Length: 260
Length: 162
Image 1 (cartoon, rainbow over the protein chains, first blue to last red):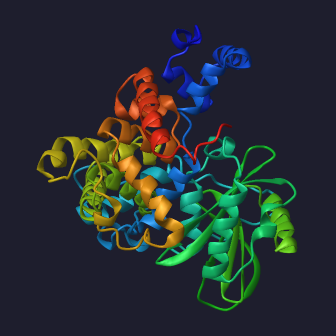
Image 2: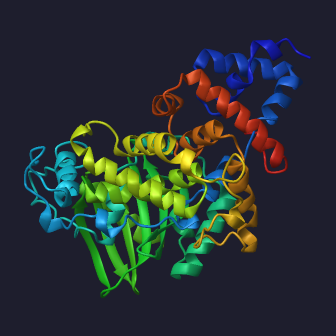
Image 3: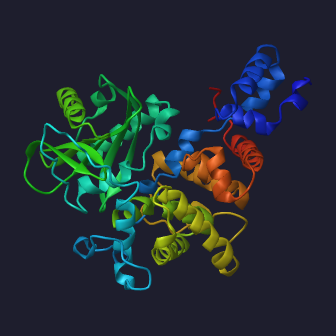
């Protein structure tokens, strides 16, 4: 038995595995592992298949339902300013929350002095819905994600089966660091999400789903404070979304279109 | 915020499933949480995070209003084959293992399960999870350590050193 048994608790080792210890504590465990096989065994006994836990709890796999209709506010009901407490009727409350968010985290106006404002993606459409999800991503969401080749291949095979698209080349896009792929769902249809971080830490997502409507070329829109470039090919919609720099997103989307 | 609620809802439902153990319970808890959020919309600080606010609220509703009334089998989620999960095809060969993982999470004591969900599934930092669970960070770490031991014991061949 090593002296590290008391020096490092299981909670410490858990923090180490999770990358949550400070540098000093991490260095101490790193150093101890050089000489202490028991410590390595203790770490092994705490190691778990984190990626598989994430896959098992994937909302799409679990069949997580969409927000029930009675909790959704029709866009035309949204007021232009927050309503006063006690005055607003209950059916307008979702819109009131929308207004409160508009004042805060959700909308980041994009100002390009040399260009007209970007068109806004249709509310409730696939681009808008993906944008609302992507808006929750921050650098930290993906910073520690390590691509797992086997898992990625499995997801992309699933996507190919469901959507008829071969997206493996999109794991290798210059200027974007691929992090993970997962199957989500939108209105009962499969939706592939491929997540990336750009060099400056901006989260990007390349999403693919079947869409109605005719094929069309690339179009740049804004939704939930994010800029996205979308196109439709053979009934499949593609959306690259992330950050607020339209020119950067457009350049990246050209790279993506070139490889897939 | 319809879009905000809409975006968070699948994760809220998943967390509700982890607490309640059944699809019906998850539906009930997730919808109650949304209704409560709408009732208390003016209390939400737009400079904070909607997802954390919603999940914290769901947990409180579960603990204060639903847990005692809910008939549950065992101390965790019901086995996946009994969980009334319509869409997920855990019976497919490729997903049998994922069903086992789901059950392993569900078999954890509630305090460990909710901590695992917040940190390892939802991706919150220890500090964030501690705030949402209203416990010290050390408690979060201890719960995760205990959960890791249990899960690692259940899937020794699946674990791999980083």
